[in-house]
Amino acid sequence: MKAWEMEKNLIESAIPKVLEEEEQQWDMMEDIGKSEDASIKLLWGSNVPGSGAPERVIIAGVQALENKGCIVEDYEDIVQQGLEALRNDDMIKLHTLTSKLYHQMNNCKKDEKSSYWQYKEYKNWKEYEQDVTFIKDPYDVHSKDYEEKILIGWKSQLVGGALGTAIEGYTTDNLRKTFGEIRDYVRKPNTLNDDITFELAFLKAHMEKGGDVDSVDIAHEWIGLIPAGWSAEEVALRNIRYGIYPPESGTFCNPYCEWIGAQMRGAICGMVAPGNPKEAARLAWLDGQVSHYNNGIIGEIFNAMLVSLSFTKSDVRLLLKEVINMIPSKSEYYSVVKFALDQCEKSDNWEQAWRPCEKKYERYNWIHAYPNAAAEVVALWFGNGDYDETLHIIAMEGVDVDCNAAQIMTAIGIIVGKDKIADKWTEPFENNIVTYVRGMENISIDELTKWTVESCRNA
Image (cartoon, helix red, strand yellow):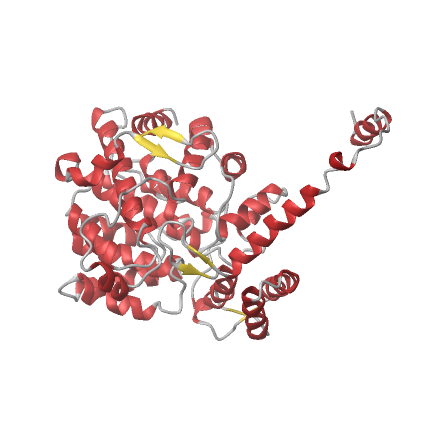
């Protein structure tokens, strides 16, 4: 039946009736308006749910575009007016100014003087693959060892996420002033965060399609399973909802496409491709381009390859170097992780290496991929396979701690095994994961482990 026939049948079957005042449903417009007002306010000023850190996502969008070598014209006055409208709760003005500012962002110009354009822009997987020589280690995914490593990998990801969620969005100095040296949870840990959310969506798509999974499959799982996102993910969800599919879903009106949102979900791609960083990288590209672009996707590849090789490598520093060597040297992302590695090799301790990174990437938002990639490198190098020390360092570096800790601790947990992990880290979770994923609000760690193992073995 054609669309016109469906609508013709609908109206022809509709019998007129007079609605009483209480039946007219105009109240829903007020509810919708309040919801829209709340969403707009969040763009101009909000606090991170887990840690309370302040953020202004719309202003950070301008920052992100400038980081990408773009010029956003005439935004300063709009920003000041917007902040004033927010303070005055002037929603009519705030809605208008929000539209104006995003219009300026969506029509930004290339900054020819920006160093961003000195690096190669990777537009697809083929371009990435051609510029890298991948290594591969044999690994038996049908072994009991694989099952055990996946279990401890997930547990360690939960540990890192729970530790970091409470302290994300702050600087090293302010964390130290508040907590001293962080060597334990700063509050009762829980599993609620947005990190695992998108990995569950990828895993469901991979379980159904295996190695044939594509970005559209993943996008469909996103829109079905995930009620909301933030920054790049929220833009991508909006795009997908209106039929804009990958890779355009990750680039269309998305100033946040080189933030950490893809980098924070690379571990699952490595978990289903143990010892095979090329496959992990390919899967990460497919997943990453749902919401990100270029260096944003390379961030996911970095963590995917890190976790992939953690199944076969025990020397963390060697592992880190091998992963960095599989990042294309023509990319700006490579310059970031290489700079961090160089600081590590000439420093005596983590803070001595971290401070130059903190300074060099100060113009990037704390949710951008770059400062967080540098933080991962420093924590991995000076943690050097020590579970507690790696957690201590990644916590003290600040920035987007939960995203960083969850990813690198997946790898460290796989390397060291459960006997090298203190009970204080894993016992609080028992066997339960609470999420806001539709249909997966409560899942067990054992069940998640089984899904992951089967997804890999059946691929």
